Image 1 (cartoon, one colour):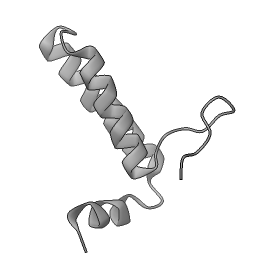
Image 2 (cartoon, rainbow, N blue to C red):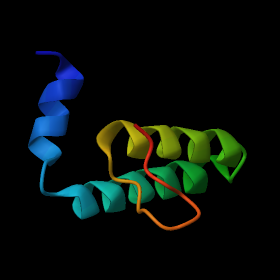
Image 3 (spheres, rainbow, N blue to C red):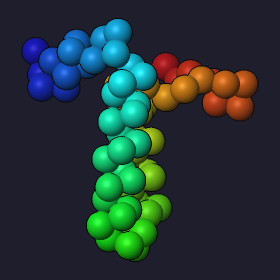
Image 4 (cartoon, helix red, strand yellow):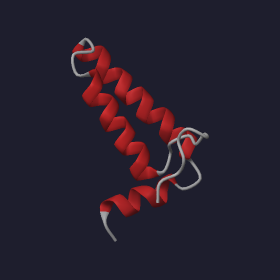
Length: 65
């Protein structure tokens, strides 16, 4: 079992909390860097949400398999 699989298992059922943590972490990095790397941080947040399955779903953002 890989490290990512273990993290995914721990986050199961706590997707909203994980999503809030991803947001807070990205906001902290943006604050500390003066938004200098905002686009890279946003990309990282999106990848984490995709990896952990915490991305909120709507009609414009269908789930990816």
